[in-house]
Length: 227
Image (cartoon, rainbow, N blue to C red):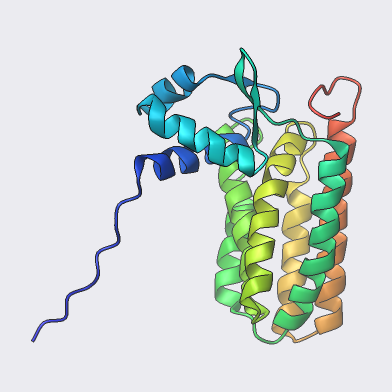
């Protein structure tokens, strides 16, 4: 007797539009403050206006776009308050996740993600920047998942979506990827050796340094992206 594997339903057109537009915003292909009409978004995605309209409404609920009368939609700006709130929450959650993950780590997987972070970034190549940011997010989520607390990991995942956009903007002005790779090496070692307090301290230092990089990069006089 054969056992049929359940077939995952295909994502709806609205879900496809949400996923693609979210990706464009988080990777800063769509920059903060950029105007986006339903017609231009539909053309970009190759979809009709109805699923695009529904997708934009969903992204507005997430705070990624805002409706503007007679202009359509704009990609939400990144504010100083946004940066502090996102990184404050990361500092509350991620050091604790790292402490709990110590001694439970899959070093092979973390080293694989770390190698992508270390080798996949070339400042002149937009795609490599996005690959680096994807790997960096996956690394941090993997550590959170190793904490054994699924809800904590899901919260970290959502926060990293928000901070990924901030990091993408920051990396346009300052390359901190080498430092981040070094921090990953140190964190993997502490996790593998079960040094919980060291792991928490290294994670705190890394998140704090990333916040400082983002703030320094986006509050320069030539930056018009932060209010």
